Structures are given as C-alpha cells and as structure tokens.
Image 1 (cartoon, rainbow, N blue to C red):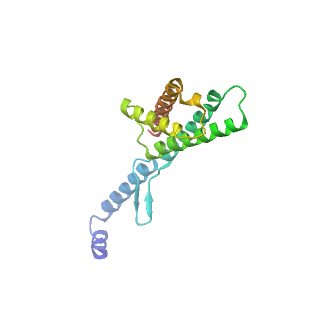
Image 2: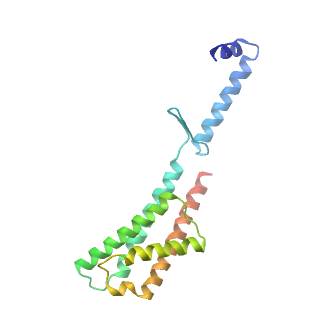
Image 3: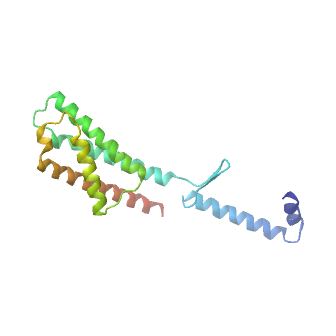
Length: 167
C-alpha cells in the first residue's frame, strides 16, 4: 500500500491527486459539520449527532412540562398531600412512558399509532392501585385520550421544527 502511495506521489499526476484528496476531505468535513454525514470508524468520528440530541432534549423537556401541567387539571380543589403524591407518581410514570417513545424515535400521527398509545397510557394509569374512582370514569378516559393525542402531535411538531433548522 505504501509503495502505491509513493508511486502516485512521485508520478506526474501528484498535484492533481493531492488537490482531489484535499477537496474530498473538505467536502466530507462540511457534510459532517452540517450533520448530514456521520462516520464512526476506528476511533475517528466525522459528523455530529447534535441535531438529533437537540430534538430529543426539546421533546423530552416539553413532554415533562406538558404532563406535569396536567396535575392541576386532575386534582380536586383542595387536594390532600396523599392525592398530590399519587397524582405526581402517576404522571411521572406517564412521562417515563412518553420519554421512551421519544427515545425510540418512532412517533407518528397515524390514527392507529395514536390509538395504541392512548390505550397504553390508559392501561398504565388504570394499573395504579391508589387511584380514586373519579379517574376511572369514561369522561376521564376521554380526557386522557385527548391529552395523549395533543402530546404526540406536539412532539411531531417539535421534530419538524428542529429538523428544518438544520437545513
């Protein structure tokens, strides 16, 4: 291999080969910097996952704020400390589930997908032993479905906005 490189550099085409190699390296560097190209081979890394990390970070932060804002909507007027703790515990579990969706990065707006996720959250909430009966009503199930749909659609919107900023 070294002999071939030596022959190329000592030949008549040395300058065009060096210029071509530099142009290729510059193009790869630009593509890597923009996040379009990512190569991780043998300890050398070209490219950046910064855009994806930014999207996930913003989706996760928004999901946490959104889910925790629901606490005020589900608690009675003068909640006991136990009711607050139960609500926070359930909402933390819901957030963990939504965060899994974000990390697996397969969220979409198909009705079937949303219905499955709505069922998943209802099962998670209903599996909690300490819930008051008012949380197991059809009206509350409808509210949960609405919240899940809104959450999914906003997560998709966040991905679209931050994906467009890369371009």
